[in-house]
Length: 236
Image (cartoon, rainbow, N blue to C red; front, side):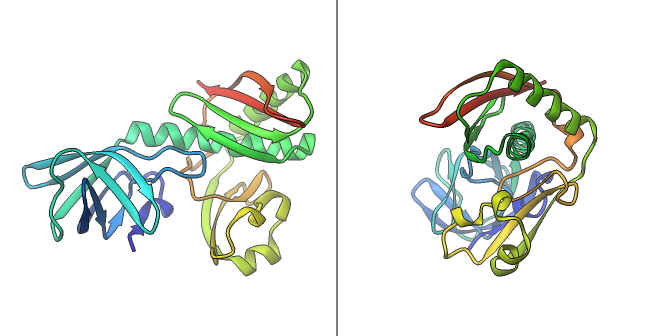
């Protein structure tokens, strides 16, 4: 099983690894900083290098383990490689994913509107939640609240808890552990300002302080089904 280094530190984008096995145009590494598609966040891209050889990493997916799709003939099993994640792409996703957490927290606290889905991109994001309809004044208030949290420079941290402890000690409305399969016995918690702003289960990448999110702007809303709203936003 590949050691998922990105869970430990989202800011690290280079690493050393060994190719465990090859599956067609995909390789499995003993450890990786490449984030696989999941949780509303796209996969990382970048390169693997070995001596004078280089392979572009074009897709990363997690099923039974983490698979890295590469261009050209892949490196053979046993090859020592250096991985380099596209740092700009990673940072963009980390900023947007952290902004999504801030928005989810405010929506739950101020509108009793739990998040039902999200998707982040490098230049925009959207969030779906349970709510009848947001007015223009609601959206303006949301913008102000999120930007206040950004400007407050709250620390963002992450850590792992066993599921039993998390279910006993954390707010179920915020962590939404009920959405995770029963097979998951350890959960990664993302915590903003020691839980005062947000504390939820998430395996995505994030910035270390809300100040790195940048200015938050809502670009629109639309109905996403009965009793559901979709909010679209960008970051400066």
